[in-house]
Image 1 (tube, rainbow, N blue to C red):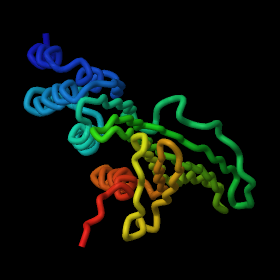
Image 2: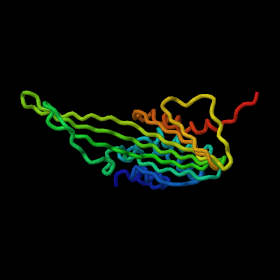
Image 3: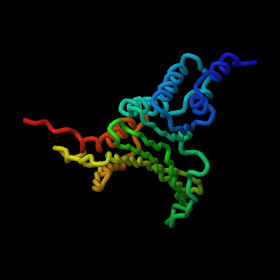
Image 4: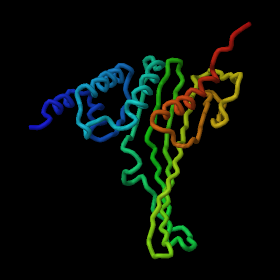
Length: 236
């Protein structure tokens, strides 16, 4: 049997690791120790699995792994819940119906459709009693245009425009009072504070879809904004 040793190695991985390999998805709510076990399993992947079809999906090593590490640093005895769909934009069910657009010659036909991919959702119970939530959605607009030149030759062009919506909120512990930071957030991040028994600080941003290697930076910039509202001020 071909690849018998590799299949045996995969069978020894963490169950969530195996789900990432076979289904390119992950959904679990676990304590810090269980996430550490998953990270240890993922760290063995490259050394044991060489076949392309069994590689970890995109965004696993560049984004999901470091994100889990950061979340577990401040979780204490609470739980971290993560749902990740790493199958990409081309999965059935993520596309909207195609709609025709008005055209003017030499354009013969034009259509537009959208791909909405809510691929990441996080909920983390932090050490100080607050709760962090994070959601990331890719929104892709696609247009296909068919033109006919004077010689009767048909040409088809497809244009794509993609943005990423990042939304995070931090629900403070009961009685915890926020403090406005000394500097405003970056211009591309919107912040709202909802006062109450448990104050909720929300931050949101819409950015052009970053390259895979740059996505963690954009997500963490938005996710850390609510924490600036509870930093202790230095006393002179």
